[in-house]
Amino acid sequence: MLIALMVLFAGLLAALPLAALRSGAAARLAHQLAGPARAVVTGAFWISCAAALLLALVQMAVVVLQSVFALSVIALQESTLYLFGAMFLLAGGAALLADEHVRVDVFYTRWGARRRALVDLAGLTVFVLPVCALIVIAAGPYVAASWAELERSPEPSGIHLVYLLKTLIPAFGIVLALAAFVRMEALVRALKAR
Image 1 (cartoon, rainbow, N blue to C red):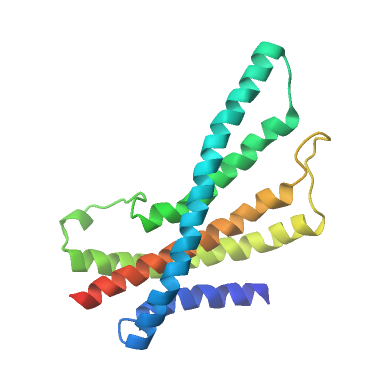
Image 2 (image 1 turned 60 degrees about the horizontal axis):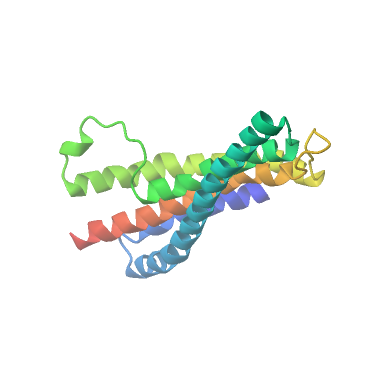
């Protein structure tokens, strides 16, 4: 059931901006939904930024505690994994939204704006959104099992929130899908303006 809902969600994210090419009502709805979607992606990015800052501070504390005081705090060491996961997985959507993701292009830079927009739109529809759906669907049972047993750290003094760490995987897929939706809506708006 959850898998069917995720596939439906990804399909709607793909279809709405594409329908906006032909329908004014779909364009208005896509534009209205793009604002909240952008807010979610931006919020995830700010969480990612905070995690990066905390990661640097915590890692420095771990090194100082080990080097100067010969202390090893397992929870502090494990927190670097949680912070790195949050930093990496929650920032992907913002990179896509800002069009700062990695491109392997030979011809793209020489093309006009309309052709680039069409290629971006096709890439988001054919590649990005299906991969986002696949990430969420594939991670679903893995994360659900972790939540079902409230998975704990293997270390007695570790962080006993492993299920929250694993939840970052489908969160990545959802944030990336929302960023793709916002990007698609902007591309469709630009194509219609021409």
